[in-house]
Structure formats: structure tokens, C-alpha cells
Length: 247
Image (cartoon, rainbow, N blue to C red; front, top):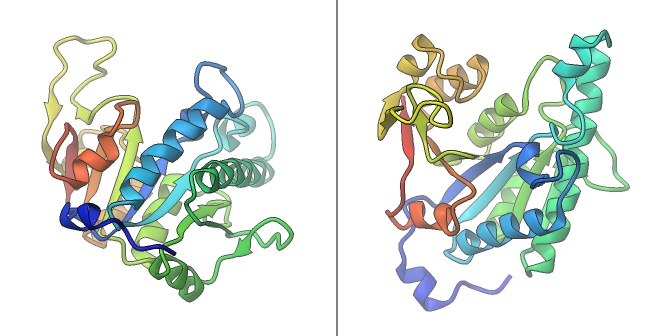
């Protein structure tokens, strides 16, 4: 893997290894369903801009643009079966993101918690760490491999296993607010907030089990807007608007 350009080395990013968590809905653009190739390409460019800084990147992508297990369960489907279907949706999204990243010249590995050797690698922690050390982006798919756990929990788990220094959560808003900024123009954005306050006030940044896992492993969480061009790389250079959730 070619080394970063000298200017990129001098940028001195704030973190050396990070987890990027995005929802499946982030990939569908204005379509309302599935993958929107221009949107996937735009996100891949954002990831490449951080990769070019010399940062090692893990990714977890949700599957809500294709199938969401909780919704299937709410409509009468058996929960375990619905969750497995949702896990397969995340594999489809991971493969789509892999194609977009490799189109940008970024070497990528899709690593699935459910073995499917024809399309991606099985999850082996030491092998995944080696991929990161070689400069490859690792996209962890199929959640934790277990029903009843969300991709938020998968992101918190894999970030801890990979010894990531922070989790970056790409949202449609530029941080955590005390109420919905889309409906309340007076909503207050937090620059920093603790995990205990997030849980106490039910701010719904991640599901409760993911937040508890981050808190217990002292993993910082950065919530930022994925729709802002250059937002991901800007934060690593000490710029931009975001909320930092600390242990």
C-alpha cells in the first residue's frame, strides 16, 4: 500500500485508528430504499480523505435501507429470523461500499460475522488487525452474528476489539441536541456530554447496550454530520462541528 503524501503526514490527525459507524439509510440518498450509487461514492470519498491522512479505518454500516429486523418483527415476523435478514442486508451494503472505495483506489476488506467465504472474509480478530496495519479499510458486516443486537452494538464491540481510539458516528445532524433540531429551531447542541447523561436523558444516540459498552471500555464517541463535505477529515484535523461523548 503506498504511503501517504508528505503533506498528509504533517496533518497529524487526532486519532490513528478509528471506527466509522453509518446507518444503511445514509446510503440510499433520496431514493427511499436501497443503494444510491452517487451517495455511496460521495461517502467513499469522505473515507478516502481520512485514509489519505494515514488514519487506519474500520467501518460498520447498518442495513435499514434494505431490511430492518425490528420492523419485520413488529409486523409479525419471528424476531430471530428477522434479525438474520437484517444482518444479510448489512453484508450487501458493505459490498457496495467496498466497490466504491476500491474505485477510489482504497484497498478494502469486507469481514462478516456470518461466514460466507465466496463473497467476504470470516471475522478473525488478529487477521483484521493485520489488514488495518497494512493500510486496508475493514468493513465489518453482519453485525455481531447474533440476533437481538444492533449494528450500533457491533460497532462498539468491533471498535473495542480493534483497539480503535474513537468511534465516529455519521448522522444527518452535526451533533447531539437536547431535542430534535429539525422540529425545534431552539434545540441546543452539546459540544461535549458524558455517556451517563446520554443514558439518563434517553438522547438516543445509540442503543443503550452500545452506549454502555462504550462507557465501560472508555471509548470516545464523536457524533458529526456525514452530509457536510469534508466533515470527517476536518474533525481529525481539529476543525468542524460535532459532539464528543466521553466516558
